[in-house]
Length: 233
Length: 233
DNA sequence: TTCCCTGAGATTGCATTCATTTTTGGACTG
DNA sequence: CAGTCCAAAAATGAATGCAATCTCAGGGAA
Image (cartoon, rainbow over all chains, first blue to last red; front, side, top):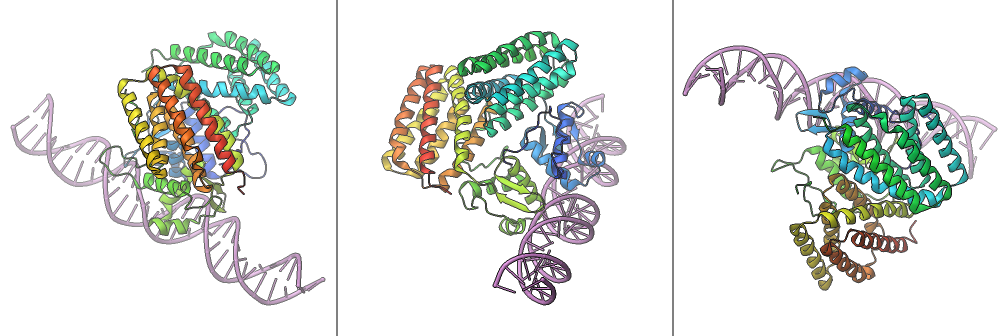
């Protein structure tokens, strides 16, 4: 798959750009992933193919293809001859994921600051403003969704499609934890303040500063999530 | 430090949990990827399912599953109702790949320097010495293979399995270019000298220094590859 | 009781078959 | 001669069938 989709939605993915409707395969992968991200299919649970076939009204062939792809993406675990389980999310995976994401955030900061255009700035700033409005309203669903779009938007400014894809994959993995733990919203005010600093660095086009702020923001988010998952299984 | 599996081979991938044999699915994915990495299946070429079925002696069902996975990994392109083609390798993808890899190299440097054990050091150093021997013999096949193992070994020292996987995926993508262009071995001496510096920083356990040397090494490799692919289609 | 064995039912792995879509080759028309 | 149209052939997308493997309740022995 090349550098295609430009989606701004959270791991929702139900958008038909134009006439070309998503193939059944794409649809199955998206919907299954969505079910796992939002926790409808619980971490570690067995998922017999027959159940999923009934749920989606398809035969086993396309369903199994989707499962293989999701296994390659780390969302399900396939045990030979023993069926699939939703890939377990363990708290001790949070560290490695955020550590890797930190490296990408830094690269996003370095490149975005160097390559950002005025249109990019307007786009990101609009998201930033919406984010503030959602915070004022106390609409945490919107906030979460916009937060996702904000960071994805920044990644796209980097102009590196592979970076975007990789980054998005990590975000989706992290997303699963938001539904596993009781999300802690006490940090949103701080988080938004950090976004302010990020916007300043982006407008100033200062690579090292933007990179540092994104890394710091990532680290804080990681710490908050580690705290929230402290008493997880 | 029990990380992931320790494979030292180039993108050959013979995954077996234990003595057990690899599943047909794993085998197909590995062998197909190998064919594309080494260029037996040329970039951009159509690959009718029937041909591959004959080649591997399997029916279309498991083959199609493998193709979907490879598509998700970026090795093949699936065009709805129109079959699969080997994902084209374009010179202008080299920059983005190495840019991303650079970010990972940096993280590998930072973490490996902080976490390296004596055993790790011995292991990496042994590879380094073999690399030198291969260079002296002028055995470029061995050199290339050991070079891959050296960097993979370093990634494993990071202790971050997700980082290893992501890094390896990038290495495999890059590997494809080695068979597309006439590899330029005029750089090996310089490259080996850079490895020397990397070893020094690793032994000294100096994160910033190791990170910087790995990043620089990555950049040089990128430049060499850009040069070699200048007159590519 | 606890452990091991067993076999019927359920589930997976792969092959085969059916349904659509695309491609191809050539006859026809302007 | 070039271009268009159409039917046959080929390829893909998805469903079904069948063999192999696993699961698990139930029974027997220590």
